[in-house]
Length: 288
Image (cartoon, rainbow, N blue to C red; front, side, top):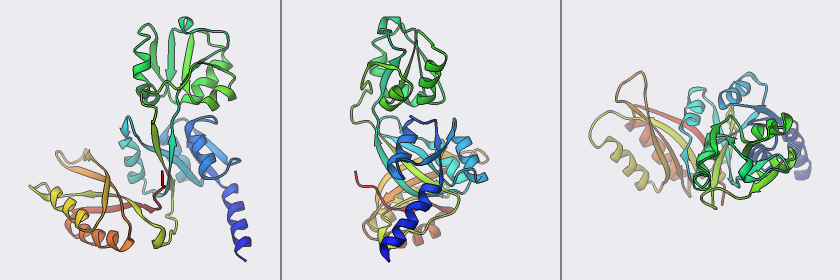
């Protein structure tokens, strides 16, 4: 009986369309393959806004979204997109990022005049790029899409920063491998849906929340004390100004915990303490 249930679930997942930022060969595509299935069907989106719009319209069933990087930090606009559109975080996935400098075959480093890539990828490779001050840095929408364009238009003198998979898929030569500044460069991705997915309480050990506090001394400290007293581990906190209310901030927080009861107790207290409280997702923490 259990085998039959698992088989049906697997078929259902494989039939779903998963939104990714970027195209096949991108890091988002790699995460989709690792989290769902190697043969996953993806909806390619060249911006996170398009990814969210397609999820809301039903063009995709779930989506993969980068949320923070171990070098560049959190991607706050993505938290805002999840919040503004009332999406739900239902899972997470960590990916070690390997950035490679690639161009059309037969070229050398001295032939390269420009390098195009996503701004996050460029930021992660600045120590390497500083060695070549003559190469112009050009920000682009996606790492893999840049690699594909170089091949399709046969752009000489232009390089891309992208994954090894992208170099193989679009037949580019890696002129310099592993150029990320920090070798243990890791990005955390979240899996999002329009509707919340049921996860048994005994499997939930991570939550993403948002709250707003009264602008008075000690209000944030009081909230942090509650989290500590309830045995929550604060893994990230980031403030975002409320445009419509000057000097008012929203706080986006990630916490982990061993027992759901501890989190539930903290949540009940925070709902009372905060002027506004919202759960963005309760899900299983991926073990690194």
